[in-house]
Length: 355
Picture 1 (cartoon, rainbow, N blue to C red):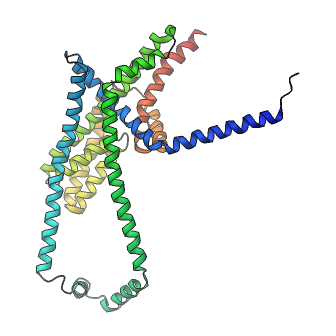
Picture 2: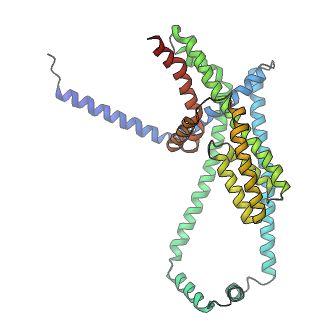
Picture 3: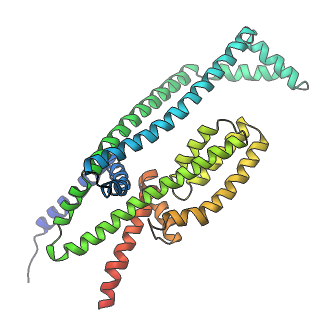
């Protein structure tokens, strides 16, 4: 009978727990880098079918990758060029409106102007008493602390914007690298598998990567359709800033399940606040009809080649992915679920049938 050394067992258990905690801590510290790498790999798999299509047109790999990347950059540059002038124009209109108010003397006595406005709009209101409450409330505030918090918030927002641009640049560089070296990466992975099982592994690997690639292309196609149709329809009904709203529709359509609904809700609310109730009502009716057409006609035709996942699995996968990794997790969850189903259907079930 073999006797275990309690000290050695406790030591090994302690080292195992410590190693596990160290590994978890390392993953948490590297989560931003892992997020960049995962996003870039996901995008590169989405671009790979386009690169492969160009290669079938007798183009070398480097030329196909270059054309694909330049096409994607040109598309995003076009969106930026379309949106930025509108935003600048609206800022200019706001500054002009403020200048007009200043020329009319609205800022010479702002307190008196507000009191006069209250007297005019609410004649039954005791404005002096209300204004006294406002002055007492303002006197009770710690203006210095509020100013400090606002300043810290502004610095944090500026830092987040700068970090976002830096992250986008890193993802772009990694996406170019992964797209250019996808065949090499695949061959390296395939060589790790024993030769007797390599052919089967390669077949499953190609199916999984193709599924992910077609999923990305399908989701972008849905976004383009929604964006273009939104731009046309919103221009017809004379909604405010139709180009900006169309860009909102495009980007939110990239989010599975709830993206179109969320983007449509934002657009309708903007039409209500900036435009008119009639415009918002017409936009709401249009998006209700469009979401039905997208769910039952457009999406099945576009995504049929990409993924074949039951609806319940799609919902569960998206919720789980979003809880674990946020927006990226929700985006990646569906192709990951499709990949698991491919392995389950083509590996697990055949093995069970052979027993």
